[in-house]
Length: 333
Image (cartoon, one colour):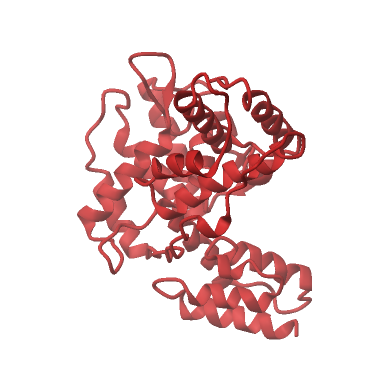
């Protein structure tokens, strides 16, 4: 999709190229700016693309159907571009951040216990095959096990292919993850056995057995050769399973898929590190591995701030994990 307007279009392309040169993906930002550019083209046809408070307010009202946090994010994207555009052009209007919708409070993660996960996996085995995936129940089972036991993000899971699975070393190679990094994820013996059984079943069924095939197959569109995101289907199935089993929060909402990461993270703090030879670096690695994605409150500079974030989890982390973490926190004082 190319920019449409003659006035802001080239500047948008330069702005996106500049950000990508700095290492940002800027996928959502590009989509938002193209949507903004198309809006200006429709509403200011023949009169040039000028940005004023009235035009910006009209576009902002078109986003009213979105959540306040999403609205604020997209308005900030356009504001950041206008600040960049003002470096070389006369810009008479820069949106005021104070007029943007206030972001709603961060939703507290809802931890899923091993017993609840066992019920969810048992229910997942009853899923019927789909037209594009005859091994639907087995696929969902493996996907949830990897998310729950290995702490994978949804995007990381859906980008895994068969060549990323090292069955000999019991590990996964996760490429191009957050901050454009790659890492090796060790698999517990039971998880590795689940993955091997699943891959053997796919080989027997001759279903997506090529090395470049996705570990979690994607649904192909009938209208084109494009593929539908595997994560989208997993999210819908996950929500359906949680509602069926009764795994919901205090407001009756199913946990998010990302909440499954917290089980493996808190498990690391419960296992702990060797008490002898404890180093600051080791505790910092524990800190970031344990709870760096649990809550914005823990993204501080000291280990004491991590304790605050762990206390905000719902339900609270296990007593063993909290006690172990307190021991390490006092050890480095």
